[in-house]
Amino acid sequence: MNTETRDLVVVITHGIDHELSSVGLVIALGGMTSGLKVSIFLTSAGVDLVRRGASDMTHVEPLEPLADMLRDFLSRGGTLWACTPCVKSRGYTQESLLEGVVIAGSSVMHELIKRGAATLSF
Image (cartoon, rainbow, N blue to C red; front, side):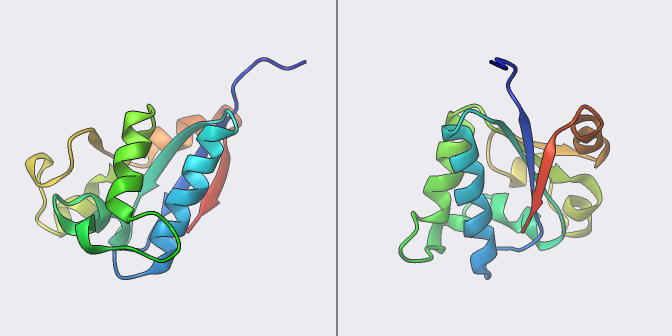
């Protein structure tokens, strides 16, 4: 039996105004529940998800509220990256983002992919 934990990188490009952002979080949390080590890379409008207060009003029924899913993901040890150029283009700073979010370029994701991580995009 393979006891090595598999990595999953979920790329989310949609923001709070699109249901795919919530779907991406559901898939990421499900991956954690199934034993995967999950990282989320937010790019384009996806970085808006982690601006402080932005996700508080987003709730796609029957899913959990987006803000709750983000808190759950981080509390369970998930890695949450926000694309550096995407953050900068919106005028966000580290202080603008939820605690636990790491501003990073795509190389962090590429390193996991090179080591065999599966990827899903939303």
